[in-house]
Image (tube, rainbow, N blue to C red; front, side):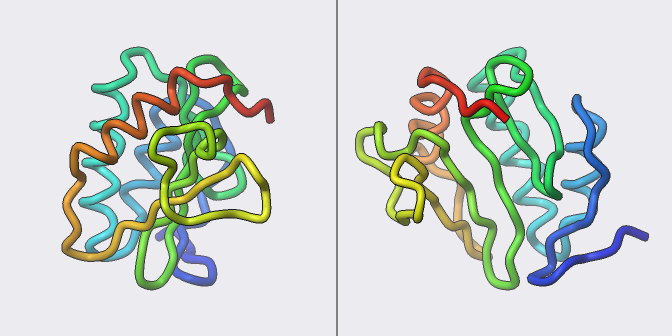
Length: 132
């Protein structure tokens, strides 16, 4: 059984590829796992050949290895999607960050993955990635 960290985020070993991300999604607690499956599938559909990894107990998605445009993380009441160049998107995702370019979007139980989210994913994938 996967250990859940504070806020209910799964503790998953760092790794590249689909396997670690699938393990993270499977370990997401409650309703978040089904949303994680939909989110992972949506990203893969919008960005064919997307690179995936788990780092710092969060999935990362990029156009190339170690150049990321999106990440997400579980909290008690929501999933926090982070767009590394979100301030450059139109419109920018609604939640600001201490990092000027980073913007967030929260998914709560019962929320749908809508066209706005798909548009942000598409925009984010076209912007320069965050190297890490």
